[in-house]
Image (cartoon, rainbow, N blue to C red):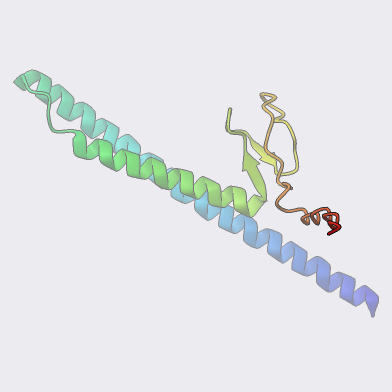
Amino acid sequence: MAFLDDVKKFGKNISDKGKDAIGTAKLNSQINTEKDKIKELFTKIGEQVFAAYKAGTEKGYGEFCAQIVESEAKIQELKNKILEIKDEASCPKCGTEVAKEVAFCPKCGEKLQATTTAAAEPAKPAPAKPKSKN
């Protein structure tokens, strides 16, 4: 019966990995959609800047810049979800995806914060105070 239990566990593991891959693919698709929006906005900004140049004014593209900032924030949020699914972290210096347990970035050598911090370790009891003799 242990063999059947092992087969079930193996099948469940494969199923979970498949779900993670599908979730990551969906998030990557959303990231690409946001990047396409940014490209369209850059084009619109360029058109307005050129029109403003020809007209002798320089206003009219602040709204597009605000939309780009929103899309960039959404992209970062989606990338963080992907890292969460993969159980990875991002190097703060170069952005390379690394395992959470890694101490240094394999690409740039930046020292990474350990995921097992002192807060995760059980607190040590305070040393006992000597009793005063009165």
